[in-house]
Image (cartoon, rainbow, N blue to C red; front, top):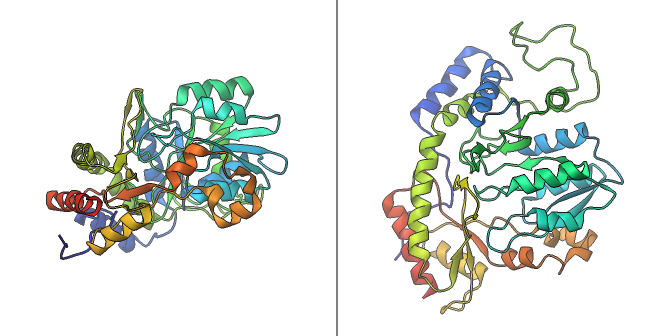
Length: 383
């Protein structure tokens, strides 16, 4: 079976309402941070139930400003998984701190209190759990641990718009950073949002994201920027423009429908792959949760075709089926392997998954035929 056209592993769902919103912004004359960015902060906070939020140029910008705001620097240690995108670890290193990697559960691919606690030393200052593929980390035990040890906690919620842990949306409690990259469940083109119930931390991030000025890029009262604004501390240029925020607003209005379709596709995949030899989807967490189905990740095991993960991905590509890899473990990437080689072999579950994981196509605009094409191709390639 060979598809007539290539099926990417992800594609943003852009509708006429998104295009109309962007047209409105372009005609308004206000393209940079303005009323749309302010509205996105307000509406996103309502959606997840948080105190407030700061719209940013990327989730990485959120992690950078948060680390500066928390005073993370030389001599400090930050605990996080190696099974994550490199941006968080890069920010830790660029702050002058030391990343300390907690191993993951083999089948959910997330860290836990049990894997975090042995990593804590008297230099530990921050813990960054990563909610993975749309599923939530078991957070309550980690909240308790951090409170007991006096540690700061930032949740990497890049995959988590629409994810619930027990009865609350990720980000409703504590501090979380979301991504709006084009492959995420909703997008602003590029962008992210910092959410917290810590008012002082929010204010610091809001100041740091725009040159360290004592007012935001867009003053909601003056409809511009106050002319007497002064630099209170050196800051960055991480503000989200209204062009991006407009797309975020129309995407947010559609997110529940997007996630409903993602859930339908994921359910079909799970049913189909249940009995196929050589492939194992991630396990669902045992605790109460609502999955956002950001990614559909499988592990390629021993199979009749004798394929490893890379061979499997290549065979699907030859059938016009795209795949992704989320992620190669950070401690096995060239820079970190050379500078932190001592971690190799100490994270068995992380390394086992890093060698086997693959992301299959999952996005709302997939047709039933697209889904069936993926399933048929997987069966053919592994048989």
